[in-house]
Image (cartoon, rainbow, N blue to C red; front, side, top):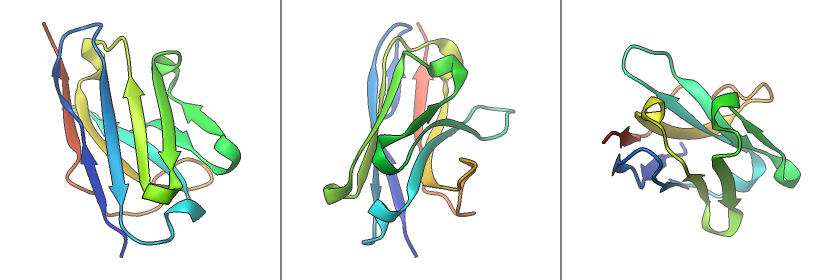
Length: 119
């Protein structure tokens, strides 16, 4: 079973930046779409950004122009560069393989990495 380890979260002031990393075990990483998801307190988990074959990407409207998703298949690692962070970006961020409709492919998750945007 593939495992995900997210890292890079922390406390940052509004307008600041963070770079999240997702390390996935297993050799099948490159075969799948991947997505970053987040869950804020009292809210459902939502797709923030996804990346598929040929570099196709999808972003939540509220993060377009601020967040950039990328992946390094040789390292089985995915990244999320987050710039111009806003308090509403505060959430626990998770990674997972993604379905064609960008929903999470697996029903298991890593521990996530917490992002807190606050002054």
